[in-house]
Image (cartoon, rainbow, N blue to C red; front, top):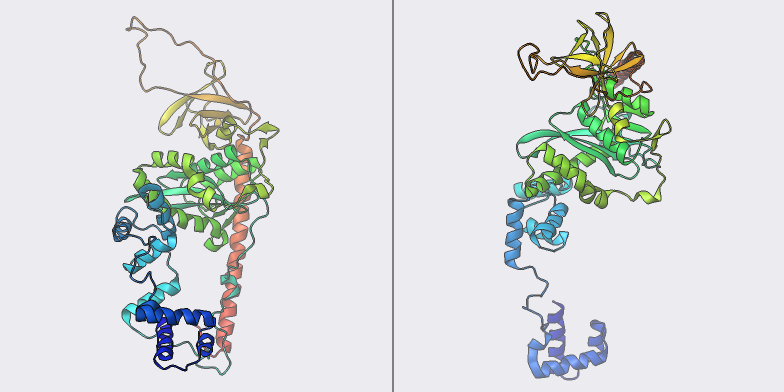
Amino acid sequence: MLQEAKYQAVKNFVDHPGGNKTRIAEKFTVSPRTVNRWIENYKKYGKSSFIHGNTGVEPKSKIAAETKEKIVSLYQGTYSGSNFAHFTELLGKYEGIHISEQSVRNILNANGIYSPKIWRSTRKRLRQEEKQKEKALAESGMAADSTEPVEKNRVAPEEGHSLRERSKYFGELIQMDASSYEWFGGIVSNLHVSIDDCTGRITGAHFDKEETLFGYYNVLRQILLNHGIPAKFLTDKRTVFAYTRKGEQDVEKDTYTQFSYACKQLGIEIETTSVPEAKGRVERLNETLQSRLPIIFRREGITDIDTANEFLRTHLDELFNDKFSMPINHTKSVFEKQIGGKEIDEETVNLICSILCPRTLIGQCIRFHKKIYKLIDEDGIQQNYTDHTKVTVIQTFDNRLFASVNDTRILKLEEVPAHAEKSKNFDADYEAPKPHKVYIPPMNHPWRYSEFEKHAKSQLHRIELELQKEDMFMEHLQDNVRAGCLIMGHRVA
C-alpha cells in the first residue's frame, strides 16, 4: 500500500507540472533528493520502478517444501507425542535438520498439529474457532440470592498452594517420587526419581516394575555414592515412607520402617505429604521425563528395564541435568561425605540399605523366603542355639544374608540344600566339606532389632497423632462450612 501511495504521488507530480516536491518529501518523511530519484526512475521504468527487486523471489533461508513434509511425517511417526522443543533437538541430533524451534512450531501448526504442552488459553481459542461459537459471557460477580458482591476466583485457605522459594543449599532438600507410565511401548513400569530442590538437578533415577522399597533403595544408593548424605527427603505418603496399619503384622511388608530406619542411621529427615503441589518440582520432573524419555527409548531401541537403567546411568546428565538444572558451583553443598568418620563406600551403602526380618530358630535352622539356612561363623563352622531363639535376618542391598542373634553377634546364613550333592556312603569321590573362612561385618552397625522396633513404634505413634490432628481439623472445617451456609440462608443436610 505504501509503494502504491508513492507511485500515485509521483505520477500526479509528473502528469501535472507545478506540484510541490517538498510536500511529497514531508508526506513520506524522506528528503527532496529521494523524491528526485523517484521521479527519474518513474520516467525511465514507469510503475515497475516502485516494485521491490526481491518481489516474487524466494529467500535463500526459506525451508524447502520437502523438508517441511519430512518434519510433519517424522512428528506423526517416529517422534509422535514429543513437545516441540524436544522435537527440535531430536531433529538436529538424529535427522540432521537444524532449524529453530519457532520454525518447527510454525510448520506443525500450519498442518493442524499443536504441542501436547499447549497453553489452556490457546487450546480454548482453537476449540472455539473450530466450533465457531462466541466466547462465553463473563460471570456477573453477584450472588443470585445476595446483594453483596462476591470475590471471584477465590479459594479456601486450606486449598491454596502458593509458590515457595528454592532451598538455599545443594543437598538441603531432596524431593523423591515414582512415576507409573508406559515407558517402553505398552509395558507399564515405574521410574523412581529424586531431584535437588536448590539446583533442580536429578540426583538418582531407577526403573522397576512396581513402586518398591528396592527401587527407592537404588535411588538412595546413587545419592550416597555420587553426592553424599542429604539433610532431608520430601516424599508422598506411600507405604514405603508412610506407616499404615495392616491386618497382617508382617515387618517385611511394613516398608516404611525399613527405609525410614535406614535414613535414621544416616541422619536424614523424612517429610511426607499427600498434596502433590507441595512437592511440585519432582511432579514437574515426572511430566518432563514422560514427554522425553519414551521418544528417546523408542529411537534408541530400548525395550527393557535393565537396558533403560544402564542408559540412564550414562546419559542422565546429558539428557536432563546439563539442559535444565542450575549450576552447583554458585551454591554451597551440605551433603555429608562421611558416616561415623569413615568415607562412604559401596560396602557401607550395601549394609545401610538392608531389610531386617525377625525369625525363630527351629532345628538349628532358619526358614527364609521358602529356603532353609544354617548359621555360620567367621571360620565356616555352624553355630547352634536352642529352639525358639529369636534371630533377626539381615538381607543386604547386594542380597547377602546375615543373622543377628540376641543383638550381640552377627553370623552368616548358608543355605541348606534339599538334597546332598554326593553320598558319603556310595560315591567314591566324596570328600567331606572343609570349613572355610567367611567375611562377616563387625557388630558396629545399626542391625539391632530392639532399636528397630523402638523406632517403628515411635513412628507409628507420631503418625497416629498426625491423623488425630487432621480429623480434628476436618471436623472444625465442616462446622465452619455449616455455619457459613446457615448465615447465607442455605439448609445443610
